[in-house]
Length: 385
Image (cartoon, rainbow, N blue to C red; front, side, top):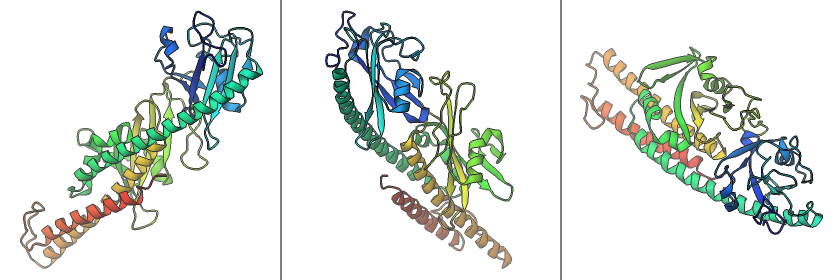
């Protein structure tokens, strides 16, 4: 590709072609610099980000129009663009967009330092063909990565479900989700917490790292994302820079604006949170709790993470409803026994029979209902979007 557009070639004659992958969630372009010709550069293997609207690549990504620049000054270039693939200062540059078959921009391709003179109209035509081929390959690679990630998520969801089915109380399920290692792996997060919603007290409750009960009001700053998700009943997502500053709020779903961080901190986003409401299935609009994910590993949460989180919340919602019904049924059985003057049955394991056999029947049927409810929740969300 370097030869086609008059770049590259070594010997200090040119600096070749580089690609910037579109990263919508950060409002930036990511330059992986994985070209074989970058081996001589100090930036080999480094991930750089160029914010929309900054530099040549950023402006092309923002406007969608190609740029043929023959006198690239420092003010026109982002700090990540000032040097070419081989480390030489950029003098001329030809930058164009890569569009997928659906018409979505997926990347920006940039050729720098024409060997002789400036880039011509013929170079622009060749660059357009190169961009089309790059878009096809990149779209295919992204699609395969999504499929692989989806399969990976389903396997970890199954692992969690196997461990969740034996839970006998709501609190057991909360402790399991907050401590089970497969859950953060499923979502690509560093930490995941299930909060139970108490409508009467307007609080969210969960268990801390050491098993202590943690109660927070919905407007508590420490759980702002979970609180906002509980109040609105919708997915809430936030990303923070190093100092915790955010340019604008991020939304989820149709019409939601994507999160942007400041240019200064575009390379150092360290904290992001997403709150997913856990809704009941038996009554429309019934909020049972909120699942909060903290700090996506390697960036911000993507569509596959959101899909996996929605599937997890559906499964957890089904389990919470069944466990709550079981607890109410056990309480009714014990209350009826006490009212009739009979000795309440001793609580034993699910296998050991009680005095009248009622408790064992509840536990056995409850396990079957939990399995059926969780499986039906998973099946209802298993079809790919």
